[in-house]
Length: 218
Image (cartoon, rainbow, N blue to C red; front, side, top):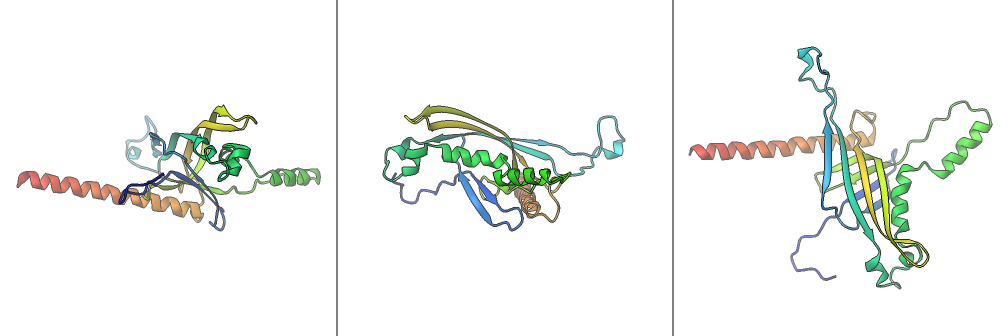
């Protein structure tokens, strides 16, 4: 597809997979088409509850619980028009993209095998390994550590081998804040940057309002 000279480069929504300990990248999932809508919900985490001490009404104990919901489309039509350039799509359709998303909510199969072997040797409690860290990237100002909380797939078309070639995916994600991760966790550091960016943008908005207010009196 040709691009107009000087046209801005379109950023795509991305889920990056990072090693939770080293923070090294282990994979990346690009949304084929940016969703038309993105729904965010922020639930206040306050010290007081209804009917509690009035002195607690304005105390915030932690960042809000933020959740994100979006619907994404995955379609192999363009790739199948050029089969020699896209042999994986010919063989598997869009299943590799779906599998990449699905494995975000699966423990490693090797870890399940290891846990079973440990259980057989008499180990009473097996702590699950820390999963990789998922980072949702939606513009340069929104880079958030997240955990998939909801996931549904509607497969709408298939090839002759019954591989899916078109699907709609609904994703629900919880932003992981310093209230969810250890303070020294690298994901917690990433959230603090995200938090500070909100504060900086809020100051930009406040400054703009002050300027407009002053100008109205001149």
